[in-house]
Image 1 (cartoon, rainbow, N blue to C red):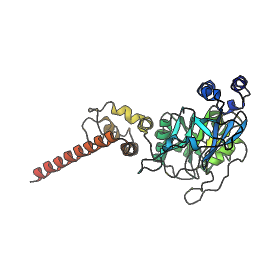
Image 2: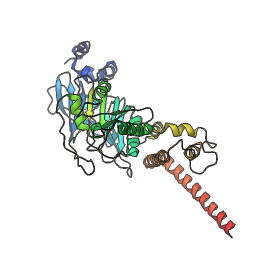
Image 3: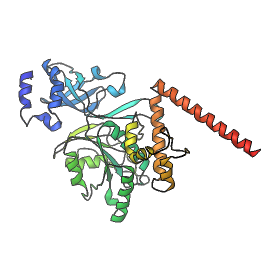
Image 4: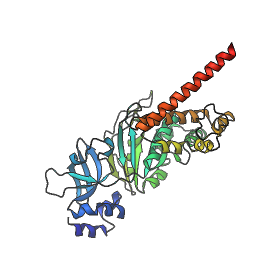
Length: 371
């Protein structure tokens, strides 16, 4: 397809890429590559050094050797917009991907400093939590921190809502999650009864959405419900702990019948933070707001005088669990960032030494009083 004919095809609302999120911004970003004869498309699947892209000419299989740098956060990913060799080359190669608008990334482990890109150019991050097991609010907060950091709008879906038949009990569960997710819609959904499905479908109809959660959370069932057909394989979760096997093994981008596209992802066993300080701040916005009234600007919210955060804990307006989770995620994020930031490592070491010296001085004073 020539540059002129490709531009002409964009004038038609029926252009195949418009259903996958193509717009004037992507057109402008791709224009220099199209002028060179390259074909733009969206990555719908990445698998073992190759990927599938949906283009104006249909699905194209291409080699990713030229977009596989040493930095794992810069490798080609499902959801990327990329440019590929025109028809005729064997093999065909992805030559570049367009600058990402958003990117959902995590650390592969809370104890390591390797990042992993999970999905690109996402508008809605749907965090799927199964009501078949006890709620883990700390995990919800962790997912939310990554979602906010990615630039996407989070939404928490409480799947398998039919397993909580008591409406009062269900409302309490929703309230518990809402407390841990300020500014985020919390939606109970049942693929069995259809509860909440229409609301979820209206959310994902605009833009690109990614389904995130642990194995057994019901992501593939939700994907099939939204697609209106059994595209994704589904296996039963274990009754003992609600965990399931990885029925989804790759990240797949799927076009929805009501508009928009959906990226289904494998279940995540570990959800390590990756440079997500601002995301943590948004998840715990009430703590950040309270901290503005602390006496000291660098208050650690532990035992400092005039701490508005610990005062809120003491008077019962801030749950202890929320403060502990906030501290935990901030510490973890600092450790991850420090592994790649020498200046921050030095600052953390200095802070640890200062706290150690203060602790030793306090103990010495205490021993002196004891005598």
